[in-house]
Image (cartoon, rainbow, N blue to C red; front, top):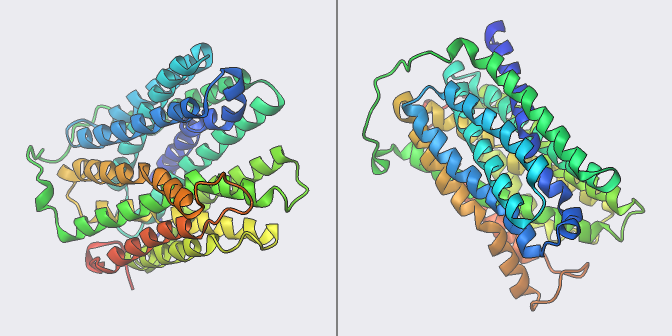
Length: 409
């Protein structure tokens, strides 16, 4: 699993670019509780602003992946990074109410999706089986670290300094991210695609391997998006009466617990997939994450440190197979249709994943007689819904062909 020095330097620049360009993704969310009052937003409007980012992300991820089969993905990466910086400064200068925040946050979502798509393609091109899982994990780890930074900067500056300064810092970070991406891609910007472009791409004719990977990824997204949306609410309600931490500090601890895990989880799972095989890692991670989903609703009465540790492990295993799933799909797909395969997978997975928070909330309402959320809320059934998704992800992983994936023992 040795990576040559040229590819190692390339990957380091890609990692730094992912960290710095992702510094805008949750900056609004980190400031949301303050901006609701500052911009006179309703809870619905506040949520719609972030929904705009997610929708823009999903659409751009589909398009950027799709067109990476026809356009040099390095060019798409640089263009999207430039849009990300422009959008960040537009948000800083002009976002001051619902309409302007929705427009500029949606632009940031489009830019983020445009960065993510070609990043996956470029890693798959640079690294072969036996190294690809770790490389993909490092790239996604940079993304997770950027998410944690964006959330923390938005949260800290809106509560202790000035939210405008927080937005400015995030915008400046994206400029350095653009520079890092340019240094990473400059040698390949004018490179022609080295494969015969296949005009037709028929979803139904994808291999059984790819179909199972898409199904597994969809189940993974359902569990992940539900966990991301509701674990902060769960922890804030459960822990607020169990610890003497200042509520603001507690909120920051929760944010770091749920997002910093992604930095390590994707790297560790990627390393293990290269060493022991993608199939083994996907089965184990999905199974353990489903177990934690089934357990979370039963632990509110436990000491707060145990709850926080369980939440850390839950997040670790839930997000940990993201990079492995992507690397596995690139292993079993020809490059001339890889972009479209990733695009199809992303729109299906994120599409179903985006409705999970609503389903989770619906289950909460039904099983708690539509009462307001409190420390007495019954979370068992809602988290069990996520656990079922994890079991499906593990099931589809068992149907994969080891020989078509990364190295296995």
